[in-house]
Image (cartoon, helix red, strand yellow):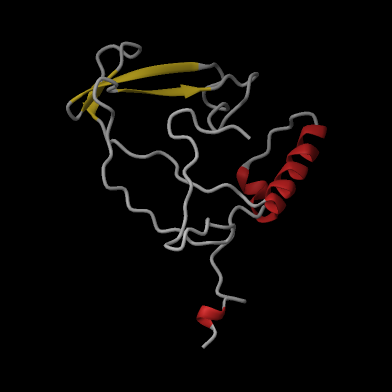
Length: 146
Protein backbone atom coordinates (compact mmCIF):
# COMPACT_ATOMS: atom_id res chain seq x y z
CA UNK A 1 0.00 0.00 0.00
CA UNK A 2 1.18 3.50 -0.77
CA UNK A 3 0.51 6.58 1.37
CA UNK A 4 -0.89 9.84 0.02
CA UNK A 5 1.96 12.07 -1.13
CA UNK A 6 0.60 15.23 0.48
CA UNK A 7 -1.17 14.15 3.64
CA UNK A 8 0.17 10.67 4.36
CA UNK A 9 -1.53 8.44 6.91
CA UNK A 10 -3.04 9.95 10.03
CA UNK A 11 -3.11 7.81 13.17
CA UNK A 12 -6.39 8.06 15.09
CA UNK A 13 -6.48 7.16 18.79
CA UNK A 14 -9.17 7.48 21.44
CA UNK A 15 -8.73 9.30 24.75
CA UNK A 16 -7.03 6.19 26.20
CA UNK A 17 -4.54 5.97 23.33
CA UNK A 18 -6.20 2.97 21.66
CA UNK A 19 -5.97 3.08 17.86
CA UNK A 20 -9.08 3.13 15.69
CA UNK A 21 -10.10 -0.27 14.33
CA UNK A 22 -12.07 -1.42 11.27
CA UNK A 23 -15.75 -0.73 11.83
CA UNK A 24 -15.17 2.24 14.14
CA UNK A 25 -17.19 5.33 13.32
CA UNK A 26 -15.01 8.43 13.14
CA UNK A 27 -16.22 12.02 13.48
CA UNK A 28 -13.77 14.43 11.86
CA UNK A 29 -13.72 18.19 12.39
CA UNK A 30 -11.55 20.14 9.97
CA UNK A 31 -10.46 23.29 11.77
CA UNK A 32 -8.43 24.97 9.02
CA UNK A 33 -8.32 24.35 5.31
CA UNK A 34 -6.35 26.03 2.58
CA UNK A 35 -3.08 25.96 0.69
CA UNK A 36 0.19 26.35 2.51
CA UNK A 37 1.69 29.83 2.12
CA UNK A 38 3.90 29.79 -0.95
CA UNK A 39 2.20 26.67 -2.35
CA UNK A 40 -1.02 28.16 -3.69
CA UNK A 41 -1.65 25.63 -6.43
CA UNK A 42 -3.49 22.41 -7.22
CA UNK A 43 -4.06 20.18 -10.22
CA UNK A 44 -6.69 18.21 -12.10
CA UNK A 45 -5.83 15.24 -14.31
CA UNK A 46 -7.50 12.66 -16.52
CA UNK A 47 -5.77 9.34 -17.19
CA UNK A 48 -5.49 8.00 -20.72
CA UNK A 49 -7.94 5.25 -21.64
CA UNK A 50 -4.98 2.98 -22.44
CA UNK A 51 -3.00 3.84 -19.29
CA UNK A 52 -4.95 3.51 -16.08
CA UNK A 53 -8.45 4.45 -17.21
CA UNK A 54 -10.77 6.41 -14.98
CA UNK A 55 -14.40 7.39 -14.56
CA UNK A 56 -14.49 9.76 -17.55
CA UNK A 57 -12.38 7.94 -20.15
CA UNK A 58 -15.47 7.15 -22.24
CA UNK A 59 -15.92 10.91 -22.69
CA UNK A 60 -12.26 12.00 -22.47
CA UNK A 61 -10.08 9.12 -23.78
CA UNK A 62 -6.74 11.00 -23.82
CA UNK A 63 -4.67 12.03 -20.82
CA UNK A 64 -4.69 15.69 -19.92
CA UNK A 65 -3.88 17.89 -16.95
CA UNK A 66 -4.37 21.39 -15.66
CA UNK A 67 -2.31 23.01 -12.93
CA UNK A 68 -4.35 25.59 -11.02
CA UNK A 69 -2.95 28.59 -9.20
CA UNK A 70 -4.88 30.45 -6.53
CA UNK A 71 -5.09 34.22 -6.11
CA UNK A 72 -7.29 34.88 -3.11
CA UNK A 73 -10.51 32.99 -3.80
CA UNK A 74 -9.87 32.75 -7.55
CA UNK A 75 -8.28 29.89 -9.49
CA UNK A 76 -6.70 30.06 -12.94
CA UNK A 77 -4.65 27.71 -15.10
CA UNK A 78 -2.09 28.47 -17.80
CA UNK A 79 -3.28 25.19 -19.38
CA UNK A 80 -6.77 26.66 -19.91
CA UNK A 81 -6.20 30.26 -21.06
CA UNK A 82 -8.92 32.80 -20.34
CA UNK A 83 -10.58 30.80 -17.56
CA UNK A 84 -10.69 32.25 -14.05
CA UNK A 85 -13.29 31.34 -11.43
CA UNK A 86 -13.93 31.44 -7.68
CA UNK A 87 -12.33 28.27 -6.38
CA UNK A 88 -13.87 26.10 -3.71
CA UNK A 89 -11.09 24.78 -1.48
CA UNK A 90 -12.03 21.34 -0.14
CA UNK A 91 -10.22 18.41 1.47
CA UNK A 92 -10.79 16.00 -1.41
CA UNK A 93 -11.59 12.50 -0.25
CA UNK A 94 -11.18 11.51 3.38
CA UNK A 95 -11.33 7.81 4.12
CA UNK A 96 -10.01 5.02 6.24
CA UNK A 97 -7.91 1.99 5.40
CA UNK A 98 -10.03 -1.13 4.96
CA UNK A 99 -9.60 -4.14 7.20
CA UNK A 100 -7.29 -6.90 5.95
CA UNK A 101 -10.37 -9.07 5.35
CA UNK A 102 -12.11 -6.46 3.21
CA UNK A 103 -8.87 -5.70 1.34
CA UNK A 104 -8.59 -9.42 0.49
CA UNK A 105 -12.17 -9.40 -0.85
CA UNK A 106 -11.42 -6.38 -3.03
CA UNK A 107 -8.14 -7.83 -4.28
CA UNK A 108 -9.84 -11.10 -5.24
CA UNK A 109 -12.57 -9.17 -7.06
CA UNK A 110 -10.00 -7.09 -8.93
CA UNK A 111 -7.95 -10.20 -9.77
CA UNK A 112 -11.03 -11.75 -11.39
CA UNK A 113 -11.65 -8.54 -13.31
CA UNK A 114 -8.03 -8.52 -14.49
CA UNK A 115 -8.48 -12.06 -15.80
CA UNK A 116 -11.38 -10.93 -18.01
CA UNK A 117 -8.98 -8.87 -20.09
CA UNK A 118 -9.68 -5.38 -18.78
CA UNK A 119 -13.30 -5.32 -19.85
CA UNK A 120 -14.82 -2.08 -18.68
CA UNK A 121 -17.80 -2.42 -16.36
CA UNK A 122 -20.32 0.28 -15.60
CA UNK A 123 -20.73 0.96 -11.89
CA UNK A 124 -24.47 0.23 -11.99
CA UNK A 125 -23.74 -3.27 -13.38
CA UNK A 126 -21.72 -4.35 -10.36
CA UNK A 127 -22.72 -2.07 -7.49
CA UNK A 128 -25.04 -4.65 -5.95
CA UNK A 129 -22.19 -7.22 -5.78
CA UNK A 130 -19.62 -5.05 -4.02
CA UNK A 131 -19.36 -4.25 -0.32
CA UNK A 132 -18.36 -0.60 -0.65
CA UNK A 133 -18.47 0.30 3.03
CA UNK A 134 -19.19 -1.11 6.44
CA UNK A 135 -21.90 0.84 8.18
CA UNK A 136 -21.44 1.37 11.92
CA UNK A 137 -23.07 -1.22 14.11
CA UNK A 138 -23.72 -1.51 17.84
CA UNK A 139 -24.02 -5.32 17.65
CA UNK A 140 -21.67 -6.90 20.18
CA UNK A 141 -20.77 -3.55 21.74
CA UNK A 142 -21.56 -3.74 25.46
CA UNK A 143 -21.78 0.06 25.68
CA UNK A 144 -25.05 -0.08 23.71
CA UNK A 145 -26.63 -3.23 25.19
CA UNK A 146 -28.13 -1.78 28.36
